[in-house]
Length: 56
Image (tube, rainbow, N blue to C red; front, side, top):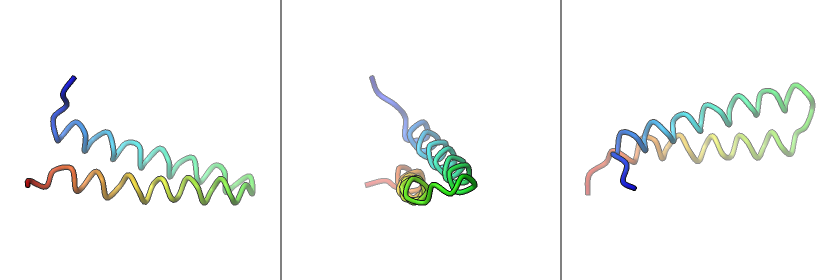
């Protein structure tokens, strides 16, 4: 199965948003290690959403 660059970019952007929302929920419950993990994920996925559209 093949996905377009735009599809992949949208997927990574959505995953970054989901990770950030989860981090907010975890932080409100004082689960700091899990919060840090989700923030790391958000920081990983957001640049991927931008770099996916770069042509080689």
